[in-house]
Image 1 (cartoon, rainbow, N blue to C red):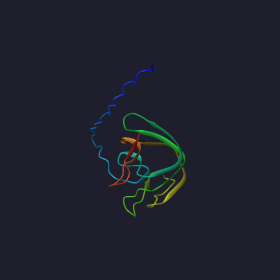
Image 2: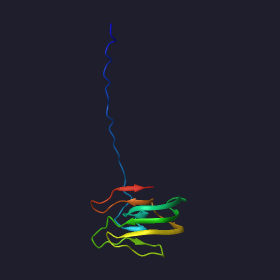
Image 3: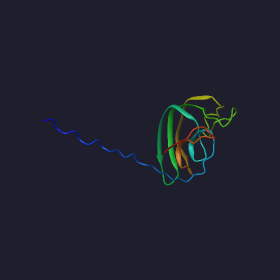
Image 4: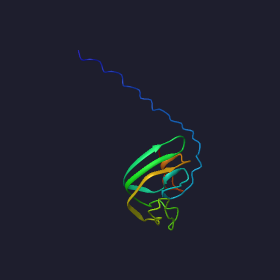
Length: 128
């Protein structure tokens, strides 16, 4: 006599409900410096070696080498991406930067080190 067929499992798909509070994000293109809630904001990183340490609260200590990227999400066709790194200059919309470096930098009052928050319908990620 063959074994009886087992009952088919009943799979319950879970429901996820998330309630969040805005951190007051705005839109700013920042390669390295003073974004709304991060040191790097609304730019695409294509390469780099980053050493990042969160100190107390919303402060960051960081260094990087080989940092390259694209100002891929500008607020407008003329939106430049700023930097406070004294060795480099702002990058225009669609522009790139290559092989930047910085040591022993600090930034405070930032919820994350990098964010791709977006402006309007652009990016929507936050990296801590």
